[in-house]
Image (cartoon, rainbow, N blue to C red):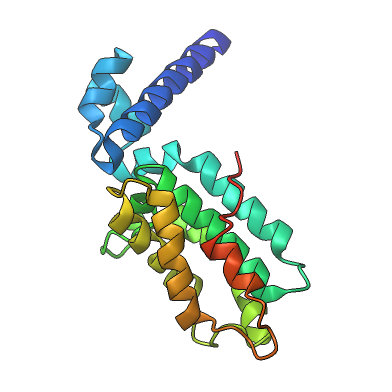
Length: 207
């Protein structure tokens, strides 16, 4: 029994490693059949682990989503709620623009029901909600701004810039433009510090 479990774990690790390489090369269009061929297993084995492409992408980006959620937790108690939210958005932008397929895993698939729930988006939403709530209390964003709004904004930017020669820099430039509409600089804050966190100093990528 123990040997069988160990073999299954090794098989999954090999399949996931191949999936990561295929997604890096082909983005969200990575083929489950190609993953099976490269991993040297049957398609049924791959689909047992990943029932569909969305499940495969969620597995590939699991650690990145965990890191983004952890960063949100670290920023929750920051004194400057606006800067904290912008720093997290910068981290999400760096990830979404630098890793092919990352933006796709956060985009809703447009279908209702538990079978179509976006686990990554839900996980991020729960972690980042306090940052948005704190920013709203501070008057830094509108009361109607939601985590889903901000994630949709960043994923849209990432998808629009993925073929740019420097997608990360371009994504941060566009995010800085959007921030001026979402969270205009507060009166008395004329040094541009918070905006610079998005436009000129992309958040350090967490690993």
